[in-house]
Length: 162
Image (cartoon, rainbow, N blue to C red; front, side, top):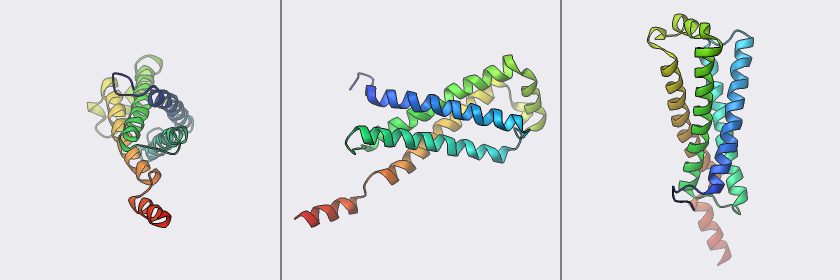
């Protein structure tokens, strides 16, 4: 274990899955943009599915590499780190998109979105990071409930063996 408390294995898995998550989010963003659906907020729910799938993948990868073991705190750490890496890198790209590449899109956001008058590129990027981190925690927690064996399963195995 390193000084900062994160094992190199957790960092490697988180970086890989976080970057893949960012690429999937960028692809989905441009797909929505291509079909003129970027202002349909309900479609943003699919961002959560993308985030959840990469957090789950990161956790299953860790579990496979550790002989089926998935400690709770390591799982939470891995899930949150994966989602934060994905969300921060996606937020930076969105910030670049609305400030440099297509600044007209920020004008569209201000005109079309609820509370748009209060938005600017920094607030948009910060919102993406906050949503990603919080959603990452929820995705980690939910995934761990599914991936970790229950106490009942452990009791049954102990009683069957004895």
